[in-house]
Image 1 (tube, rainbow, N blue to C red):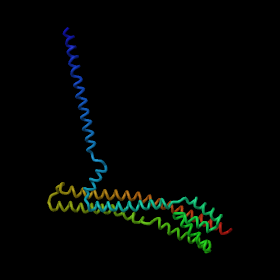
Image 2 (cartoon, rainbow, N blue to C red; image 1 turned 120 degrees about the vertical axis):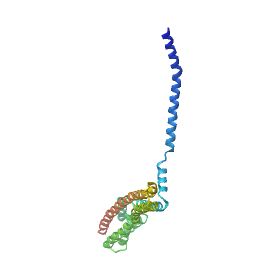
Image 3 (cartoon, rainbow, N blue to C red; image 1 turned 135 degrees about the vertical axis):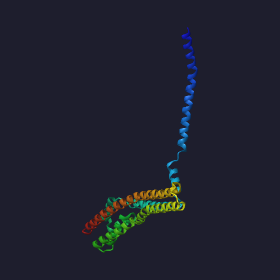
Image 4 (cartoon, rainbow, N blue to C red; image 1 turned 90 degrees about the horizontal axis):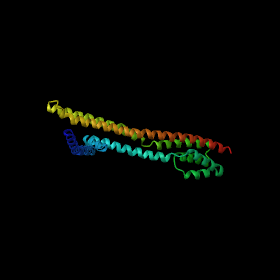
Length: 255
């Protein structure tokens, strides 16, 4: 009988205490989840960290590095838009010019090219214009080559400035590094003691300017390589189209 009463008492105690223990465990788990969520919300985002580091780097050289980034991106975006507008379907244009020559001669081909945009259409127009003026095939070929070089110069316009900003960005960063280190050693000299707290800020600024200068140079270098590759592609298409146009004019002049 005593054993039975003991078992019943134990069951009663467990029945009473287990829900309380479970409730406390659930409450603790919820508290930990809330604290974890708050910690995640309080953690700075990547954008906030970049902004913080930029401000810590100081306004002088950070401002110059930022200016090189803005100017470099402006040139890069302008060139990319221009190059995409300059890129045309040369095969289609050649077929249209050939058809116009067969149907209406040089005059009709010139009228067709007046409504076309892009460097290839401009080169075609200059070559056909010499033919229309009666200067002959040799003059038309020279005009195609000469005006082709002019169009290549237009494609490469302002690209040298982008290369300059790529070189300047890390240079300004390194200059900020050197000046920051000089400032750190000046503080050591004045204090007469090698205290890390005296030089920590100067060294930190020095490293931040270097990092941001290299980041800007990397970003602009990617755009620069893309633009150069796009220019090479368009120039190759221009050269192939120019050769095809000369062959077409030779064929037309024999008729």
